[in-house]
Length: 201
Image 1 (spheres, rainbow, N blue to C red):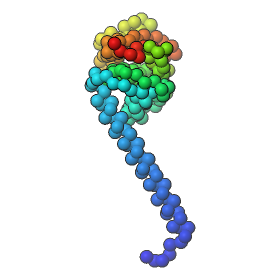
Image 2 (image 1 turned 60 degrees about the vertical axis):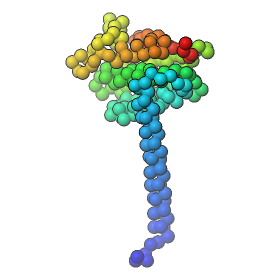
Image 3 (image 1 turned 90 degrees about the horizontal axis):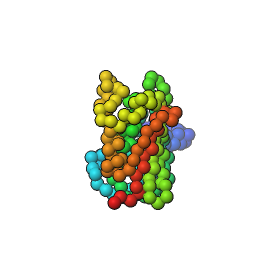
Image 4 (image 1 turned 120 degrees about the vertical axis):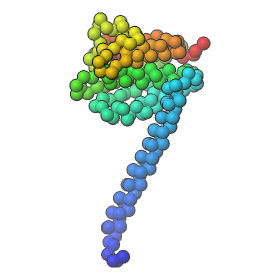
């Protein structure tokens, strides 16, 4: 209105508006992706429906959906899985396994202000088996307790709200619905090896 707008001011405004628009678009796209992930995993967590999934993509969707929880901590989650693993399976079981393993680590593995790292490494062995290895760099479990880790209501945090059902659910989902096996060991933290057949009967 005052006829005092300079060319440099206009260029600066245009650059700022362009960057703001880019950030808005990026966040809208991220919100859309988050909503899609939430919708899918919300269905899967209470479903025993069988369908075909790309395992790596699905694990990343679960990790993405858990970001609000992880952001409240100082811990990191890393997913390692080839992009070409296509399996006919029960995604709801995989969802419950992954979420309970991560939740168990956040509750028990990293005391104090220790910075935690959780890794999920999935791959296939031959044409018959899927293997998913879980590893954290936490405190592990006392050897005397390790053999009871999948028992119902077994917890090392009874007075801190632990129900002792998380790993029992993991064991049941793996052995019953997925038709596989799971073992636990201490290896610079807690280490799980989960195996299940690529093709279900």
